[in-house]
Length: 306
Image (tube, rainbow, N blue to C red; front, side, top):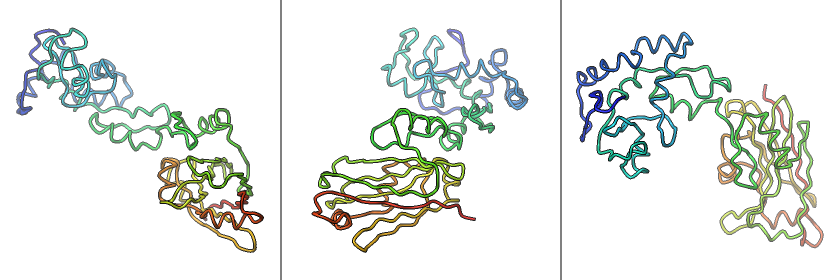
C-alpha cells in the first residue's frame, strides 16, 4: 500500500455501501488475490496468501488484525487495540493516525480461508478468516496449560511435553498403574494457607491422570481435598471413572466421580468441590493418636467404562 492510495478512506462513523467496498477491492486486484482464487488456492495447498498474511499482521503486536483495521495517511496499518497503545500515532512513520480505516484490506480478509494455527499439532481444519479465531480458542489440538498447582507456571504444550515438564521441572512423582495408595503426613495440620501439597501423575490405559491433594479454607472451615484430572479432552475424560477412599479408627469416606479434563484449571475444579472433601476435625480423627499431626492414607483406583 503506497502513500496517497485511494483504497482506504477516512470513515468516522464506519458506514459504507457494498458498492464502495467492491470498488476498493477491485483496486487491489494487482496486489492481492481475489476471493475465488484465494479460497481455491488455499484448498489446493498453495501458499498464495502468504503476502496477504503479512499485510494482515499488526506490526506492533504481530497478531492478526480484525475490523476495524486502521491506517495512517501514509498507508501503514495496525489493529484497533494497538491504535490506543501507540496514542493515535503511527509506529512506523509517527504520523497522526486519525480515524482512517483500511476497508479494502478488511474486505480481502473476509474472502480468505485460513488453516488453523495449530495445524502443526494435528488440526486439519480450514476456516474463514473472521471465524478462525473462534475455532482456535476451542480447537482440541491447542496446547494444554501446565496442570501443576503449586505455582503460576506458564508452560504449555501437548501431553508428552507436559509429562516431561512435570517430571523434569516440577519433580512430580510418576506412577504406572490404575490403583494408588498414598500416605500424607503433615506436622502442623493447622496451617492451610496456600498449602497445595502434592500432585502425582498416573499412567494407565495409555493415558495420564493427575491426582491432586491439598488443604484450603472452605468458607471459614479448613478442609483437605483430593481429586483427579485427566490429561486430555473432556470428551475423552468421560470414558473413565475413579474412586477415592480415606479413613481410620473404623470409619471411612469414599468418593466416586469422573475425572475432569486439565482444560479446566486446577482452581476451577477445586472451587467446584468436585472431589473428596475431608474437614480438618474428621481428618485428625482419622489420623488417630494425639491429633496434633495429620496422617492420612488415601487409596483409590481408575477404571474405564465399557
